[in-house]
Length: 290
Image 1 (spheres, rainbow, N blue to C red):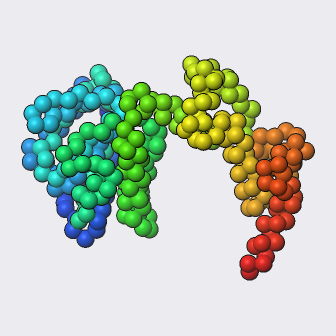
Image 2: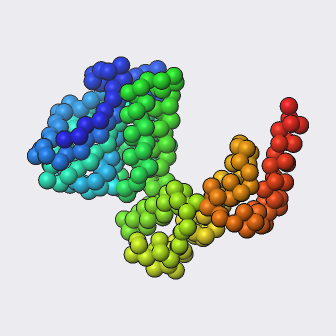
Image 3: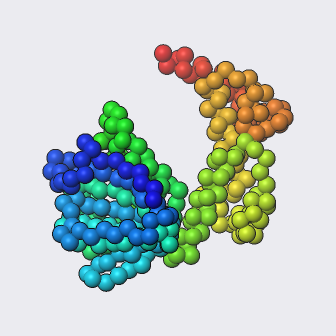
């Protein structure tokens, strides 16, 4: 069994915070592979809130004595003093992330993000972003660097915002899967924008038709995949022109263009300036502001 967790002041004791609107007390993750069963039963619940995310596999929860078997892509919310009873089974290979939080305004914050007082389960779909947020919280709570408590609240708020978007859009499971496909494509393009990419090949390797992929990607990002890749390259070229001493040829290679003349033409078409002109303009503006 894999466990990765962190606790405020290294204490596992739950508590109710009355000083802050929102406060993160602990967080962690479990991944069962060899342990046959991991039960949790708190008849009187806890003093704080708990939000669990099922990243993969299944988990068994009980609400008002009735069992609900929830699959990957579900969030589960427990409120203070509610009975908590749930089970993980190694054969179902669950990967679970959790965070305990408290504060003097939690109920209103949850309402703000569309989570009604009687809601226990929310289907959000699976996303690497959810895992990133949970892992970021664990790391912050372990290291306790300057302002870590404030950053923990920021991460939790980011998670609630992502959930709110799903709640507002009220997508069916099929549409959530579509959103995940587009999220995955966006992340892939961001990581590989400077390499030779074929939209047709990307769609084919993900068992998607090219036309369907382009249409849905445009609905999701307001740009075609080709336009999105171009915008990433131009944006990163601007960053390099503004913040480094790389010459135009070097920047062209870094962002994925072998021909610097072609890069210069594309850059000028998109920005109205050649790369050299853009760099001079930025440096001149910085000098004038001093």
